[in-house]
Length: 428
Image 1: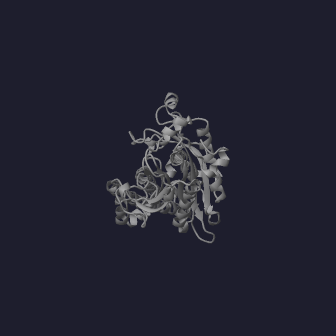
Image 2: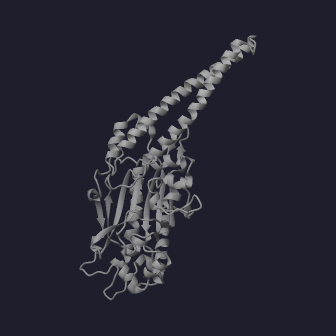
Image 3: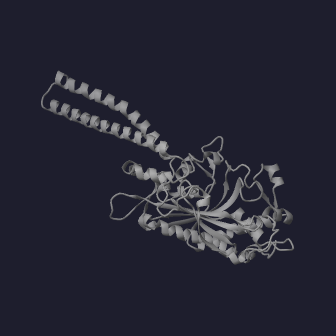
């Protein structure tokens, strides 16, 4: 959530930053400023009335203490005025409460402001490639099978039976396919915990307050699965429960940074992606993912983003999968982020890179929504922490990349060396 004080004091600066985003937020910003002005005016009137009410109360007490008749005209007049002031105050309070609610509703729909170092652009075509790794590992030639073709030929994944069980965009993993998925999860968690992340196994069902805190609500409600009878949703990413582990808490400066990693199943409707990636593991309604998450001091958050991205890259390098790193432009960046790197892995069958991880610095955007602060010893007040998140990695997409990049001429698939001890085999 954006800082209302920043909007109030620097409206042109905020408007210019939001204009770099995809979407038009000018009308919302204008409405917000009008509501804020009205609310502050009401607040001023309320303060004056409250002060007058206090003065009248003291005056009545002084009159009576000075010998005035409690039922006399002088005291009666003061009390009548006091009652009128209280009536006006009682009428102002609901109006002010309504204005504050409207302001909050608009604030929740405004995205984070891009950082000064975020590339300016309209869409994914304007993203900036930062670096590549593993060019020498890219398979040469053509005729490479797609991962779903390999999976079905090897008998390790089945999509048709998944439609019978659920619907399209689900997969059933079988035998070595299930084992490979489980091995990838364990491998990633092992790497991250060795790098200093604390493993978390959070609830998979999350409430609306948690989705609001992380930025999924209200904007992305249509992308999530909601339980019919409870205020609970299937989590779209472990980012949601990890963000809210410290919701409404005040941490100490010494506790920062806090680094978490978590494996969770993730559930997304994929609204708006009709007709895209209808086959395979790239865009499923249910998928597994290992997430990295950081609560950090504001002074270090951009350095922490570089470290987080390197931790995601480490997984790809250990698996020896070719990839590239992109700095997302302002028009392609996620709602809560101020700066984002995407990692894209090479898929030989498509002859292109596909996203496998997104690593973002959200600055204080999520912390304001979830009210997560920290206190510096010896200083008055508190500050909002900065939060960062990144996929480390999406398991299904990693499996797809392994199947395609390690496919052999005889139709088998070699198991990456770092996974062989987990699987107890060299080939699928």
